[in-house]
Image (cartoon, rainbow over all chains, first blue to last red; front, top):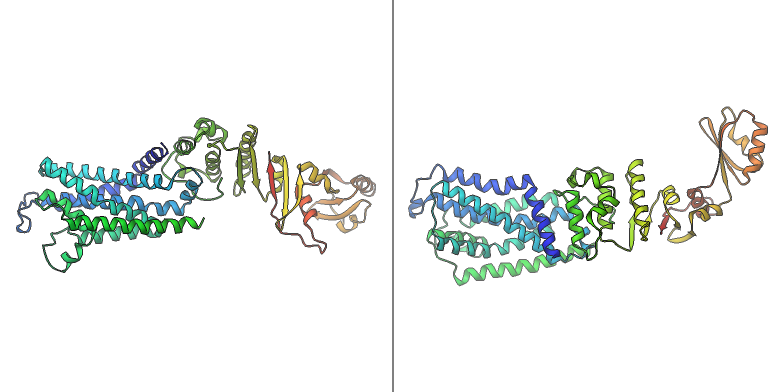
Length: 245
Length: 229
């Protein structure tokens, strides 16, 4: 009950914040139209046989979901700076319920980004089979878990004035090296390194819709390992932060 | 109630208080808490568009909505203007009138004087007085005479009977008296032109100074605390 009340409160707060919506929902949409609209009839991207609008639609779905999840948790930094988390600590609200609200809101933001991008893709003639779509979306939801945890970790490590650049830079970097903007190919240094990043598997999840392979066992392992490691670090950061009443 | 910290943004006052109510097992009604804190007419305003005094009343509403038996306030009126302060204390009294205990710490002794039923004065970590404010004030035997009296040397007035010290503030003289009856008679005899006379008993602040002044004349650092039931 308490957890739901707080999640509802968090959702109201988030979807009322005009600036946050414009930037977190608008940015992927604008990028999509800038890249995909001029190339809407290119159906053989880099000789891969994939249409450019589809490639960037699913790539930006992954990108938007990742940034939505990270930024939701990272807003804890501002709430810590404002003393709000301290206020909550003298209520019966459990920390887990607070984190649940953050993650739930992150997924809600990611969901809205997805819907908007799918609608935009449709407008540019992208079509996607239901089976592929379901598999892709399911994997994206799983692949986002480490980023939700990462957001909470960053929210406890950084302060209100450093969180913006940190999250923006990190998301751009991860998106770049994980193949959001261009295909990584199947070998080479970048490919070898990227395989150990959860963002690589997030982008791979989105590429299921392009006819790509679903996750290998290694993919599940990478995502699970990052989730566990980040969760341990987040727990440590949380305890350190709250010890300092 | 926490002393500082910004209120969380992007919510209306009512939503914030309602959410806080939902976190507790036996809360007050949301409207009741808003009414009590004097927020009824700004309940639909966003929390980041409030003045300092209004924000403090929202913090008060957040503190009372769980319906606690004891409410602890640490210097709740710091930075408030006169009107906001008065409105705030009316809210506190209204909450206490429901049979609740409110404990507050303050450096503004006139607040304790006006709103507390019981005061505990602390100096250097030790309790120096504890009781109803009237009783504490009565322990200080002095009264103060204020009057308009230009063109007279304050030090000359200090030698009048019953006067322990005299001071001048512009056209006004201030006499601290151990026996104000004797002092006022002597004053009127010697200076028939004295006007606008006020005789007041010592305030809690005078009592505090009196109770905490060391024999060597330096005043102890003030950390008075007041309790109100």
